[in-house]
Image 1 (cartoon, rainbow, N blue to C red):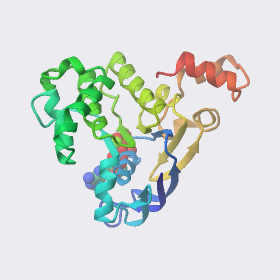
Image 2 (cartoon, protein in one colour):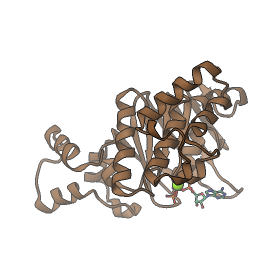
Image 3 (cartoon, rainbow, N blue to C red):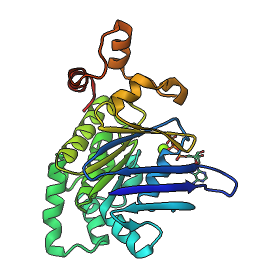
Amino acid sequence: MLTFDHVHFYYKKGQTIINDVNFTIQAGEFVSIVGANGSGKSTVAKLIDGLLLPKKGTVKFQQLDTTNPDELMKIHQQVGFVFQNPEDQFITTTVMDEVLFGLQNIRVPREEMRGRVDTALRAVQMEEYLEAMPHQLSGGQKQRVAIAAILAMQPKMIIFDEATSMLDPQGRKQVLSIMHELHDQGMTIIHITHHMEEVLSAERILLIHEGHLEFDGDPFVFFETMSVEKYQLQLPFAVRLRKTLQLDPPFTVNWKEGIRSQWSIN
Ligand SMILES: Nc1ncnc2c1ncn2[C@@H]1O[C@H](COP(=O)(O)OP(=O)(O)OP(=O)(O)O)[C@@H](O)[C@H]1O
Ligand SMILES: [Mg+2]
């Protein structure tokens, strides 16, 4: 569905920000991207939906190439982006207008709009706030409205770039559970985060280190086999506990499911 093929990127000549990155993400996957501050995660996210274009190599979303302007339009319609700070995403004055705004941009027929707005707001449990002003909502509610605005456009993939990092534990939990609900319904989810507990509930983890793809695989294998401190990351509490108590074995289905159900935030 999404392919990075020998992708290189820099902002200024002489820099190397993304260095020969290769991966393929299939439709319906839930992938976490992790790495230290400045390692290139947001740059990768922007390369995915063509906000940035590779200097070398190709980025393709369902065979559409981000460097082709006609194809890029189609990519924008299918890939949604939720940012860290919900404030940055609001343009209008009511929740309803906020969700309508994107629909007008992609020229959804007028008679279809209201239905899409209602469905999207219901999906994030914000249907009662239709007339509310986005700026007066709590952080978690704002983020849910931002997600609704994207859902209304019926994308195939949503990238969450640290979308939970400014929220309190309750807000984080709600947004994360929406992400998992969408995933259960077949949406492809890319979740960029510094919260390792959240990573446990992903199906796959990509570690970006100094612009390289340093690890691509199962989060449990990642935490058990990599020295995460080297990448300014922390082990999730459950994995630390397992290591401290020397419980074994780490890779069994029961162990994974036990951690997922008890310890991952989801
Ligand atoms: N618009 C820009 N112009 C120039 N350099 C940039 C720009 N945006 C990012 N960079 C640089 O590119 C590198 C990667 O940045 P990026 O934002 O992708 O990192 P990140 O992994 O998302 O970090 P964080 O965890 O802090 O969000 C950093 O060195 C950053 O300073
Ligand atoms: Mg970032």
